[in-house]
Each structure stands twice: as C-alpha cells, then as structure tokens.
Image (cartoon, rainbow, N blue to C red; front, side):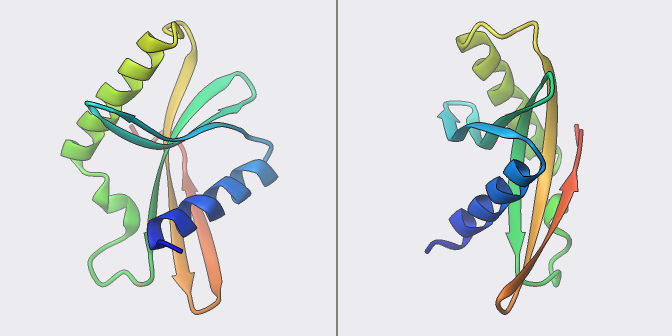
Length: 113
C-alpha cells in the first residue's frame, strides 16, 4: 500500500470515529488537490493529510507552507463554487500521521489557515 494512502486511510478512520462524515477523497482540480473533504456538525472541513515516520525534516504540518496554503485555498474556493456551496461554514485542517513500526499517532490541527 502506498505510504500517503495509508496515512489518508488512517485519517479517515480517525475522523469517522470522531463523528465526521467523509464526503470525498482526493478531490483534484487544476488549482491543486484536497486529500479529504468531510462534514462535522454544520461545517464543511477540508483536510490535508501529512504522514511521516520521523521528524528529521520537521513536523508534517510544516510542509503545509505558504505556497501549499495558497493552492489549498484556491482549490477550496473552486470546490465551493463548482458545488454551489459558497455560503457554507468552512474550515481547513491538517492531520499529521506519525507511523512508528506497527503503531501510529494522529495529531489533528484544526483551522490551520
């Protein structure tokens, strides 16, 4: 199984356990990609998943730099426009997945942007 997909699968599992409803995975547009789109209560949540086995090169969320944030925002805007959802409450989160041998840890950072 591909490393990134494993992280996304674990993130979806985590979200569903927390009461989120997964709407889409790997939404692609010219502007970029969104790993997971879900709803939580009355919010539409766009989630970037970053998976790592160590932090030698920094924490996973640090990879969601200014450039990546710009692409995420543009992709979210396109998604909302294309689905006629411009009036929804929206949030952009990052989920860090740390893989250690046969274990993992989830760190959910809400409203990163």
